[in-house]
Length: 236
Image 1 (spheres, rainbow, N blue to C red):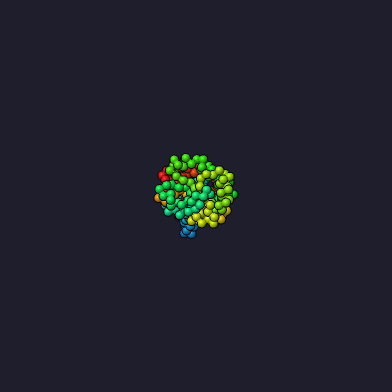
Image 2: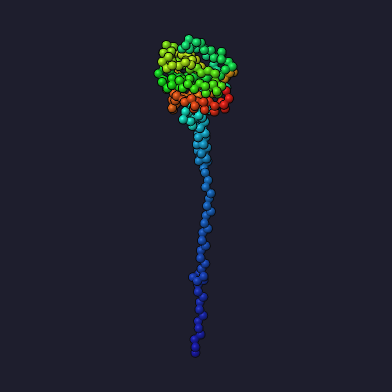
């Protein structure tokens, strides 16, 4: 008698049909966020840059020509201010009174003194090219220095200076114009300052060339005129 086939046992479902485990979902990337501390630091740095820039601008007088080969500051009193009185005796014995020049344009040139040879070269350059200043509207140029009369008179004669040179011993006048704040000798002498006083007695332009970092003691007349024109927009 034939044996009946034994029915097969179904395979274990867990062994044959086990589904693969689902892959974990990748985490969403978070956007880059600055912490509050970094934001505050950035603001502080930006403000520091602005403040430093403002200080540099202010230290150069606001209108200083710092990109020029002949940079200058603008001291006080500056453009728009009434020019302080000047009453000094010149090396030729004449008496200079700034108030008497109302209606005229006068250039005041404050310089270091007898020991500054470039300063006297500056006077001679101005003297030789005075017609160019006149064409711009300047009526007179006077030089002021803190050295005593005898020394200044001797130097002016030696250099052949014919334009007025006004000794200011003690820097009484120079200090009222802060002209002794821009030189190599500290506050004990004038630097290299030009101030244009208009017909109304008001300062039209100012350039303090003698200060740091270059301590310029000579400016060619063509440069002086160009910067004067730029500073006054060609109107004296």
